[in-house]
Image (cartoon, rainbow, N blue to C red; front, side, top):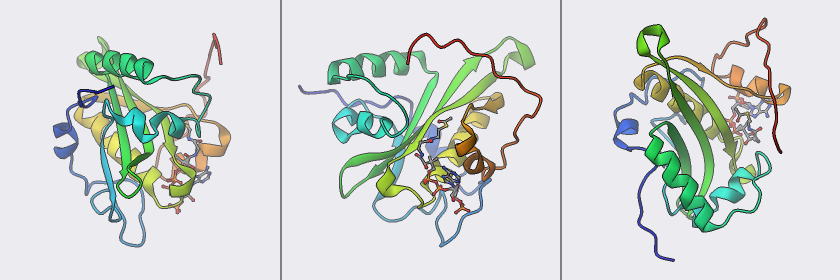
Length: 185
Ligand SMILES: CC(=O)SCCNC(=O)CCNC(=O)[C@H](O)C(C)(C)COP(=O)(O)OP(=O)(O)OC[C@H]1O[C@@H](n2cnc3c(N)ncnc32)[C@H](O)[C@@H]1OP(=O)(O)O
């Protein structure tokens, strides 16, 4: 199937960010503005299904049966909504998507018609973990949230992932209770 290549959000938005402004501590000269050679950060593309995007997500949770058609349907809905900033890490040598994190934005009437941001679906492929890419993706989403007029940015995670988010100086809200109805897994 030949696919028209487009991006889930305008990549100019990423270019407009000041990538030198980061919250995490980095080492070995790596930072959002200085990735190791052969890696790039960009918005998710309509042809990333063939670059192993769904396989990557399966390192995070159950993905289910995904065909290219279903991927494209969901991609187009998310792109048209202009509320899903799915930001990925591409590895040139393998031509695979090896990391991803999403900023989901919700428009509000409160706080001067600002928006609320949520960080969702953060994952780095096991073969590329421990190279500071998780921090890079999160740092960029935090900048993106500010750029898109979010007054607040939050996420849900399990206990195991909490030390990772603390690296971004995110505060754990002690008195917050998370309520949930799960319709299916
Ligand atoms: C909202 C959500 O999506 S919650 C779900 C989070 N995702 C997952 O659990 C999926 C499986 N895990 C992963 O994909 C990865 O381990 C991630 C995304 C959590 C981290 O990605 P990585 O690229 O390996 O992280 P990175 O190399 O940037 O490490 C950042 C720091 O956090 C620490 N860290 C990374 N993962 C973890 C973890 N699971 N537990 C504790 N500390 C961690 C690292 O030691 C590192 O510390 P340092 O900066 O002092 O060296």
